[in-house]
Image (cartoon, rainbow, N blue to C red; front, side):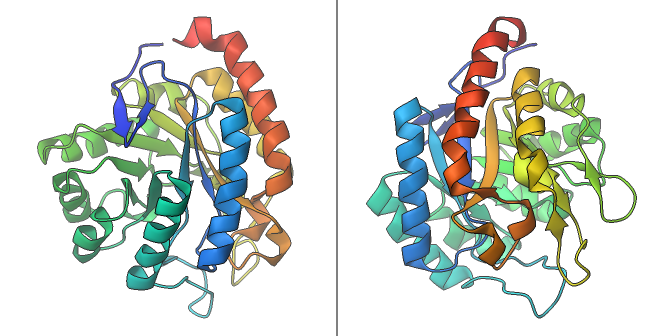
Length: 278
């Protein structure tokens, strides 16, 4: 498989044979203290294994199944929390942007601007994110084929972006179900930019709980190992100390105390397959 371009994320490097990168954190910002504690724990696990780490958490979950669901602290307070936690932990941070008008404020704090899957074809949003000068991570929509991601890349490049990341997060398979087509990973990587695999959203059952999404977190290790064997550049995982009590995506998140063991497996898989995929 061809190597990709390198993307610099602060002091970290993604792609082009760089170490497997982990983007991880709770689904939504619950509080500054909670995000700091989870971030500290993930950072410690990653440092022991020399895994570059980017902290993720959403300041606004704008696409919840129900209008009554918890969405997070919002743009202003959420960015304030991310900025403070970023400084305390000395790690890059990433969060979703949902509107062109959020880009300016978000780009002052975030190291990567993330375009949510449902908005991956919103041209104005892609162009504004590209023009911010920040790396842009686009989650491929559940409704898109992997080769359709080439159009996303061209939109970003036409607006001046070269620090582009694509993320696979599963494809719609009937009602309330997602499947992962492993072929999508080399297809998306063939556009020349690093590809992340969103492990935990790929086991989500969208709307599976009626007014919320559910998930099948028991399958996280299986699809994570398969994706690493296919030659991805990094992993995206939502991690929580107690998923059953999480206000968003609890059914598909990885328990924090399971992270170290899973990463050990994935590093071993990568070591074995590296000569063949890079």
